[in-house]
Amino acid sequence: DAGVIQSPRHEVTEMGQEVTLRCKPISGHNSLFWYRQTMMRGLELLIYFNNNVPIDDSGMPEDRFSAKMPNASFSTLKIQPSEPRDSAVYFCASSSRGVSHEQYFGPGTRLTVT
Amino acid sequence: AQSVTQLGSHVSVSEGALVLLRCNYSSSVPPYLFWYVQYPNQGLQLLLKYTSAATLVKGINGFEAEFKKSETSFHLTKPSAHMSDAAEYFCAVKGTDKLIFGTGTRLQVFP
Image (cartoon, one colour):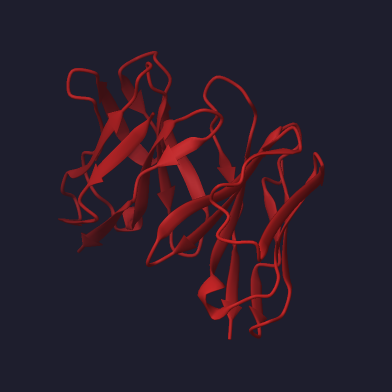
């Protein structure tokens, strides 16, 4: 299995621009999670989906952030407009809704907003 | 509600010394507990998990953790540290449909 795939791996953009991060979960997994990691705030859960439906988006910082999961094999996290404080590493993870809920993480997207 | 507390944001050991990373949990139901490791510039990787079977859980890279209900602890240990163990380690507990992560412990290994 290829694991969780994220693209791009690195993104550098200017303040005010739209940024779209992409994630392909492991085939057969029906839960998907978006995390943000910074030195100051550590690892934060932004939003998660079960069976393509958003369950909890309470971690989404503000309306500039949005996430979609149009099908079981693809999700996006969009920031519009981006700001320098959005600079972070964004991780996607997936899991099957089994007993242990073990999550498998992607390699992350390092976002820099100048 | 479930939660985990990792004691010590930084731990330093010499190569060959015992590694002990502390995690205490809070859970209203029998917990499922996890340790993840994050190497520099990589995503999190599962080290081991406890799912109410044996209380001593063995993971990858020589790590193990012991579930102690009386102490509400799930500490991670390795008898002999290696330079390649330098990383950040996260303890987590299963919540409703998601994992609740601790704040992480950065392990430094000195030669």
